[in-house]
Image (cartoon, rainbow, N blue to C red; front, side, top):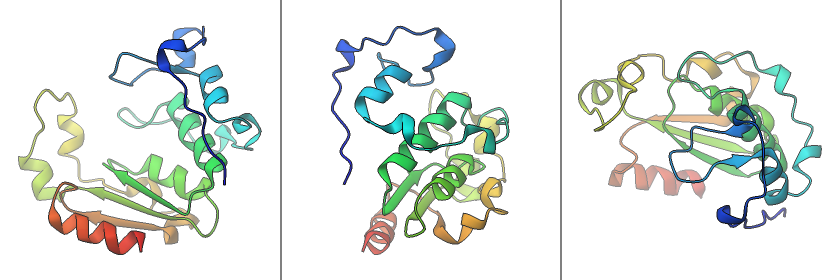
Length: 168
């Protein structure tokens, strides 16, 4: 089993141009490619082909995030992946396509009705929350058979039971 190395973000030696960092992280630390290679030794040899994935539409994972998701998924070879928040399903598709055949992906998002009424505070994503396109990005993928989409609140007891069933 491959094990990531823990990297103290305050000790990051990654000095890269802003466009080479994984920028959308809301916390105080950003991760660069050199950090990624330190955390996941050998990841640069994972064989991930970024060119397989077309440019994202606004609101989806950008190019560097796509590289991060695809490379880490290929490197880790997970048995199960749980994704909370689906939007169109671009990252879901990447994880399903880049993981081994035995991998199963569970992705959860609010129902369309809940997406209309439960707007998180301080969000700029209102157009996405109101969008009815959940999962369309993986609907034509051959890896679709590995994906289970559930539409419920990920903080609910109902989802806890669904997650337990999925992981068992």
